[in-house]
Image (cartoon, rainbow, N blue to C red; front, side, top):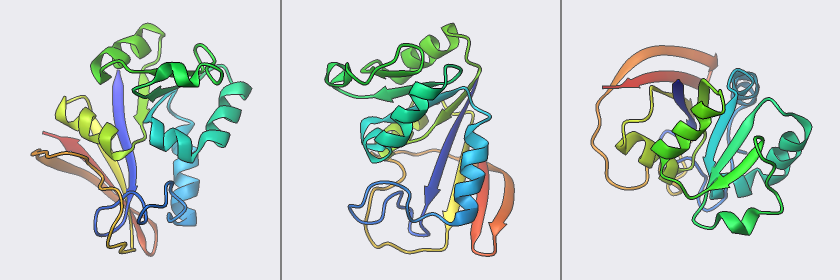
Length: 176
């Protein structure tokens, strides 16, 4: 199974602008790339804050398609019982490794880890990411949610760099 972390960040390493949730800060080029890229993954994993920021879009997609699963990590899965759609939108408090085993058992082989900072941090810490794809936006926020919550020490190997537009880079890394 392939597990890829996908994140957009500011030059100063934040995934949100101040306390504004979501990725409204990303360029049009990133939005197109991200949308096209997500179509190549059959499983999308995220934390509850990321889910809350995009709840309407994610819930609507889960009702319209049966081929993808969206798995949301939360300390309170029961709180979301009315939104859950087995095999399409599920909520879990399982550790990341257990969640990946569950996803694999459902037959999914390509997993996108979509944040937020706590989720990226957990997957990095537990060595569960095969690659990390970073969209670097030419913006400085000064504050916000850091890309990795907690303290981490990890070396990454650069595997690819591409321009999405004149001000936006896509940088792909492989954790060592």
